[in-house]
Length: 577
Image 1 (cartoon, rainbow, N blue to C red):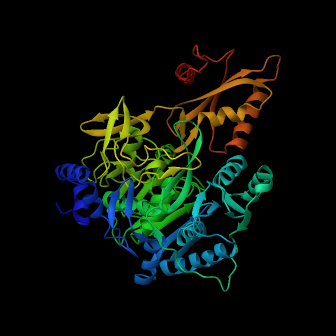
Image 2 (tube, rainbow, N blue to C red):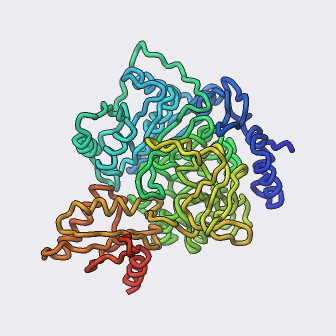
Image 3 (cartoon, rainbow, N blue to C red):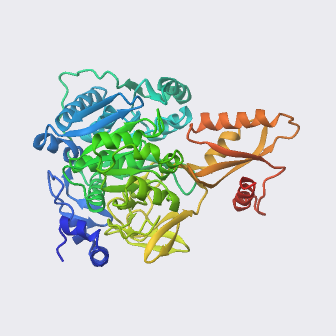
């Protein structure tokens, strides 16, 4: 069977054709992925698609060249990004040729600072054009970027700089949120104090100097060269640095984006993610650029100054594909339909959701009010570890609500004890976990347990929740251990435990259980304030506490393990009171 790019796209709209193509892609892995590589520019084409746990053996390319350089040649004046800010009156654009120039300017800066292929560069920046260009400059020279969400605390920033052995820290001095200036420099200074004598040089990217006499030659990468490190909370409850290989990652995100979203040259695409998350990497930066799209990026919040920022941007930019998070939808729905209906959203043809499962009410509102009943909803499921989309519904109007749907071509999934499991290797799968011994189960066709519970509805997969102790707040995956570790240093507290329960706006909220230290007589208000402030400083503002519950002791098993299910039951019962 010959699978062309156009046939792959068509198969994501037709159930019978999908089943036929999916079966072929699983049984003929190398042949299927070979059909997807023609869209990539190769300095040297791969000798083999897959062998001995390695993808694209012998191939040489560069994700930057595929995402920017070739479009700067073929469509130099096309807008690559339109950047909206906290202030609705500020709007910036950059063409592909201008982006190419900006990236090369940053490349020279990186090389002047001694950064070379294989080095790690920390990026602590908001969603700006210069932030994206900084990521691309790392890709240009084969350095690994480790992007840290700009809302994280000094504790988180310092840990990731140290753990990744970052050679350089690139940042901006401040950002604006909800009309207020946030001093990023203070967070960086606090992180530096924690790092002691291993502080990397910090470069502020608000005024990039011109560096003469430095090469801007591109680095052609092989199949095993690495693209980036991105931290996530794993099933062990500890932050881990997920490392992706550049060329296989490029193949997977370009193929999934093209097949599932069917981008067209005249589309305007708006992804509301932050660059600090995997969605921002894969489907805000790299995949849309790979296909030469015009993208909208937004450095602000959907509620400021009014709850119609998204809809105003969609109308102004004539956005046709809109990819966002369920938390944002639930929040915006709560403000009523008037903020939506005063805008013309008729340019939309496709909607997408990412980060957490949607509920039925949010799905229906998304479909009826935002999509006006004619836009399919691509309700995707995937993880930092998978690099790109693994499950998505077919791109038609015959969809089941809140069902992630179908595995992507070439990804063999099954359900074991109620948990979604991936049974084979595929190009998007992470290469390794930073600073951990290489595991034989990464790229040797052994199963990858995703940690997510699923059920099957009419032959399609629905995500129902986590099997471990993670908390998904507004699409941000945090560990209960992070909450508990933060509180362990408070003198007022003897023990604490954190669980997640459902929440109609943020998806989940954190409920903190506390046992006060013996002999303490502090007021509840005083301790509550200390708990919330400690968590905010240790993790960041996104780690919001829904409720604090005081117990005489934590329920534990005979081996001393906290019985979190009992705590969840207590939390839910008190929530309904």
